[in-house]
Image (cartoon, rainbow, N blue to C red; front, side, top):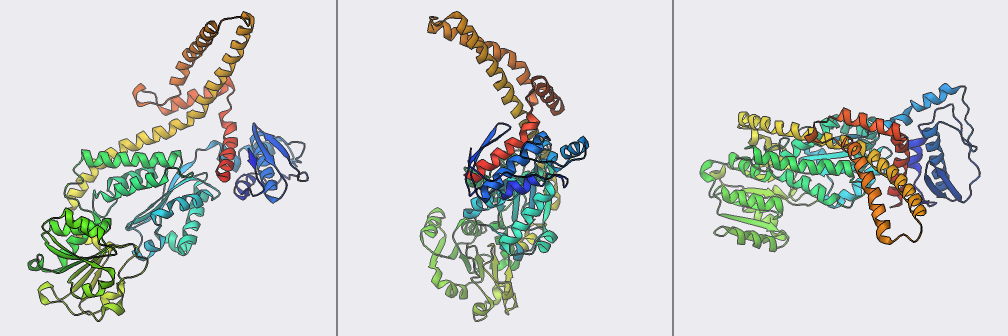
Amino acid sequence: MAVSSSFAGAKMESLLLCCAPSSMSVSIRPPHVGFLKRGGLALRVGSGVGAGRARRVVRCCEVVASGAPSETQKIDVSSLSALEQLKASAADRYTKERNSILVIGLSIHTTPVEMREKLAIPEAEWPRAIAELCNLNHIEEAAVLSTCNRMEIYVLALSQHRGVKEVTEWMSKTSGIPVSDLCQHRFLLYNKDATQHLFEVSAGLDSLVLGEGQILAQVKQVVKVGQGVGGFGRNISGLFKHAITVGKRVRTETNIASGAVSVSSASVELALMKIPESSHFNARMLVIGAGKMGSLVIKHLVAKGCTKMVVVNRSEERVAAIREELKGVEIIYKPLSEMMACAAEADVIFTSTASGSLLFTKENVKDLPPVGPEVGGLRLFVDISVPRNVGSCISEVSGTRVYNVDDLKEVVAANKEDRLRKAMEAQAIILEESKQFEAWRDSLETVPTIKKLRAYAERIRLAELEKCLAKLGEDLPKKSRRAVDDLSRGIVNKLLHGPMQHLRCDDGDGRDLSETLENMHALNRMFSLETELSLLETKLRAKIEQIQK
């Protein structure tokens, strides 16, 4: 494995060199081109700063793994106890403790829209965000769930405290929001709590509108975008894939989606709550944006009895498709250049675009003509975009009111008893699925032992097979050679079947995790597989491979 002079060793250096106690001093030979091999990990190291970092990382790894000095290292220790302390130090934490799944989130429940819109990350930027997060010292894997109601970062961290600190600082850097403000509004969940939270999100239990289906589609999109992204690793991708299964199961087995509405339908209900019932069918409706959310607004307006509306969009293609789908409804297309003229003739204006700037401000709204008393004398702006399309200061204009996604709470305040009953049914499913996911994640602990045991047996088989074939002579027919080879494979597979079964934590065999881990440690001792001692080497190799990509 080659490490170039541009090797970004700062991450591994800070991660591994921090393990060394203050009483340890390490001297480095003058840089030269050559190979360093430590614990089966070979690195080609050249000269320069990057190579020096790579060399220090490998040597630190050797010290942490073995606790013994090499000829190129001078370790000033007073007694053997110093080495024992090293083994129990921070280095031990990285090699023996399982990494933690964390979620650092800011949602509609804890954070105002003004802050969430600064944190929002467009879908196209998710791979970049994952790469940046995984370049942080203590982050192994990452995923971004960014919607109009939430901004949540899921990571697999080497250290809980340092992982949270690094991700929070990254969020501050990318959004421009001070760390102190983020800490005031964020929520932190770890391992089982983080798993349960994502399952609740996917099931729609954490949404403003119970059981709304859009969030499940957004969780699916995280998996779709994450495919092929290096930092979207086995633990985090497994978590999100399981969350999709949970979301589907909850909606299938409970009545949670019955009568539930999406953010877009809640916006329609909010608008209709704010105007007189007598004007529901003749209020002049304007929808700006014909994307996913905008098209859903149109469909919900039609479901509520609206038969005529104006739709402003950049192109007519999407509007024509909606018109074709909703036959019998008069949908009038207008280009974006005529937006203000259309707003002047509308009573209720829905905005749902991806515009990064405000479409409506106090300055361009104050000159709009007033609306009639039959709709309550107020022109309503219902903004379901994040970032917002309508400035909140517009409410200061006489005869105008603005509502955004935070105001949808008013719509979903009803039917609390029914919502709690359905949530309890869903929670039982989530608890069951959480246990299954944790069992799957725990089973990953035994994978290195399974691989090493099989490799150990295969080495013995090949060595003994070679001896046997040598005794039988070179003139042994190919058919006989193949028969002997098959015989040796069959014997090894039969012998390994029992140990392999006891290393798998399956629900069907009644074996619990503690028993499986006991079996793993017993096999490690019996066959000297040294799984734990190789973990640091494995992590180092994975980090270098990730950097080289």
